[in-house]
Amino acid sequence: MTVNPITNLLGMPRADLERLFADMGEKTFRARQMMQWVYGRSVLHLDDMTDLSKTLRHSLDGHVEFGLPQVHERHDAADGVIKWSLRAGGSQAIETVFIPEENRGTLCVSSQVGCAMDCPFCATGRQGFNRNLSEAEIVGQVMLAKRELDAVDGPRISNVVFMGMGEPLANLRAVIKAVDILLDDFGFGLSRRRVTVSTSGLVPQLRKLGAESNVALAVSLHAPNDALRDVLVPINRRYPIAELLDACWDYARMTNLKDVTFEYVMLADVNDSVEQAHELSRLLVNRPAKVNLIPFNPFPGSDYRRSPQVAVDRFRQILLEAGIITVTRKTRGDDIAAACGQLAGQVNNRVRTPLSGKLLSSKMQQDQLQ
Ligand code: SAH
Ligand code: SF4
Image (cartoon, rainbow, N blue to C red; front, side, top):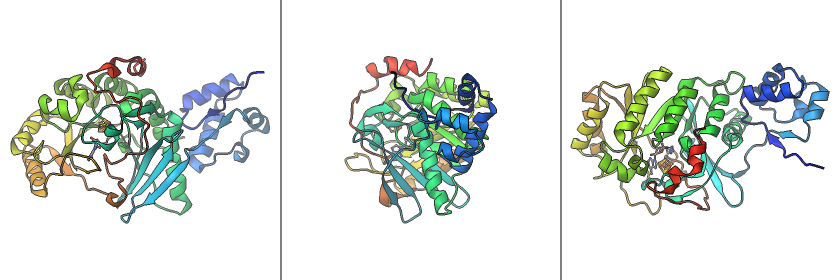
């Protein structure tokens, strides 16, 4: 007797679900019906999906599930930010953060357990990498947050950003599926401008994302020249700034995106000088680019310091004078360590490889491009 593993249907794109039903001899519209229950009404039990025939429910029973991640801890900050720490197998944990603002509610999701990119100013990077999350685990973060917010008639999730733990483009296959569900009218139905993938700059994967999806893009630039970026974002040694920016302009053109957001974490006396602001503006001027200056969020053991406000204002002014839209990101959820780059979860480190090394050429990375 063979025991089939139970398939988690959460995160399965509509086209795949339709194929599954077709293979069962069912009508493909069953996929849309099921998705309306799951994503529209947050119903996760087959028994409750009353417009699916009893026979169909019976044949699915025991073979499929809609499994959510398990909550390890939930923290509520004074400013309304919520952070969930979710179990990711064994003693591992990932984090998901909800940030309510006046006109929107942004959910920041994780894409990996840890991160192999090793950026020295990032708590996730310091922990090393364990594994990729599945599409079910990514979509599960959104579903779980939505259910907990809806249960208390709380604010809605209007935006999803892949800015939690992990490098989304190193887990491209699962991220593309998750994005598909986020944008699908029978999924979460978000507009493509409200779903943002943030990347440290894996160029081949970025080009593939542009060919297969059209979501908003944020790129962690953090330095205006290769010498400094090689240190702050070590993947730069593999894909230097000129190559990365070319891929960004192509992405904007292919996807018809008004602009790419460049994230720039402000580190005192490292990347916040007047000269560096001019250097950055020369890279981005007259391009489909806007800049997001992020205050550095310290974490235990970090060596960097936050730039003083006057340095941030000066830097911003120079970019504005070059005609580049530049905003300064507010820090939220500070009291529960929920801000950008502070997400640490619990990672039992398996790979902590400086990027010049074997990790990037490994099969694992190549697999994501097939
Ligand atoms: N791996 C992706 C997405 C996750 S990180 C990326 O790097 O883009 C999300 C953002 O937080 C990135 O711009 C990252 O550089 C930034 N970040 C990381 N550590 C930070 C810190 N300590 N303070 C402020 N921002 C940080
Ligand atoms: Fe990974 Fe992004 Fe952190 Fe760099 S900044 S280590 S890419 S999560």
